[in-house]
Amino acid sequence: MVLKTFNVDEATYKKFSALCKSHGMSMSKQIQMFMESVISEEPEAKQEYLEKLDNIRKGKFIQVADFSERYG
Image (cartoon, rainbow, N blue to C red; front, side, top):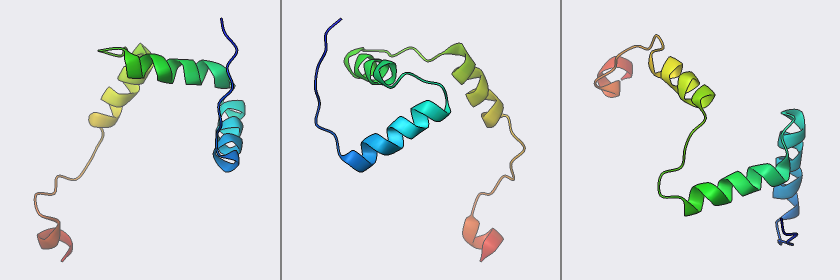
């Protein structure tokens, strides 16, 4: 493991730090996973995320072909 220093906008850092804390996530692990996803050819998504995404896709949505006709 290496220790590196990065320059980050303070407001962005504070928001990301708060997000990580509120979800019980390690900030450094999130940065590492981001870096790995950028350098990998096919990043792997967690099974839990894929299941949530599949549930969203199967949600009850109104099919709208033309918004101007439906809401115009």
